[in-house]
Length: 470
Image (tube, rainbow, N blue to C red; front, side, top):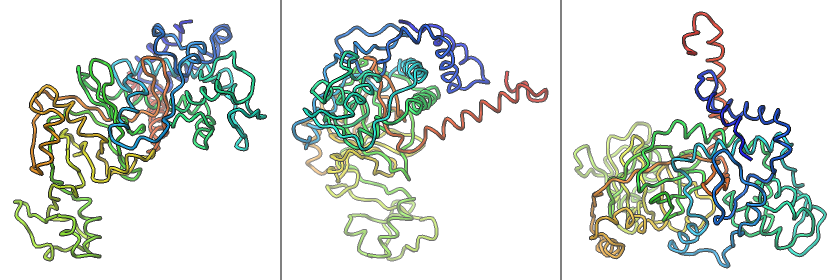
């Protein structure tokens, strides 16, 4: 059933400066609470995925439990993906729906309304930490788990009771896939932790993600690239469909990757690496103090402002002042950027690139860079970016890399790229996705938004500052 009034309320409130987008969702919750008749007639399983073969729900509607629970459960791989190609293929097989497209903001609003309705009904139950679950074994908490999955739309309402059978395991797989967890069908500690996140926190994640998108000015093209930082994945999107998906390694919590929009302007094969001054001052200096041969072992050289070589022994490596030199690593298998760099000029001086530590892509936790984005199977991405230049096929790229020669390839047509920070979103097939707030930015954003809303509200009541709220 369409939820028309709350959606209209959101639109109206969005035009009033005194109210933040977060307050719009909160007030929408109150509207839903007052609509008791509606709350009694809508289904509760609105949050989960639904089958891709079903027609999309009309605008303003929420997916139903009947739709979600009959979707095919994601299949866990028999063996872990061990190559860049197999990892990319496995990631793409999950869904071809983009994380970020022109309709994402509206769908997040719809998801927030759906979860607000669920919150009015009391949310979902918590699963005790001591609960035990095993396929084919009757457990005392099986029905509680079924209720939890039914409320989030991951299990059909008709499956409300029974032991831990394959239907229940499939429901767990659906839940895991929506939360970026390996779809094993088993209740792992991480799965249990995700299930026990209260619905109110999920609503706040949706609010924060919506707030961020409202402040992004991105020109979607026929082809574009998106890196969602909390998910640690990159998507190559063409004609509104994800045609490539790659694991990425993004910034550490203490050195987070920024959100940005830019244009990909070129691909560099066998790149050199100019070490950022912050790294040269701290990490390189520390290495040199301990081991004066570090630079030579790492195939690095020290250059002055005119790119002339400097004797490393003449440099003050005390680390007490900003470096007045540049450290550059030669291209090769030892290079930190690997064999490929993707140029995307931006004010943060970050980019996408290969790495000489490819084993890190096998990890589930991929927050280990200094801010740039390392891309698994990056040669495949490079071939896709250069697909309108027949000379640069994947085979040609591999051949050029094998020569060891530095080569800069300009894009015939620039490709838009966006690095976004979405811990919650809904794709076009009505699947609501959540990821961990690795940088702890959601609450910070919402607190700042609430303070801004309070300021304008108070300003509107004061004769000297009333103009600021207009």
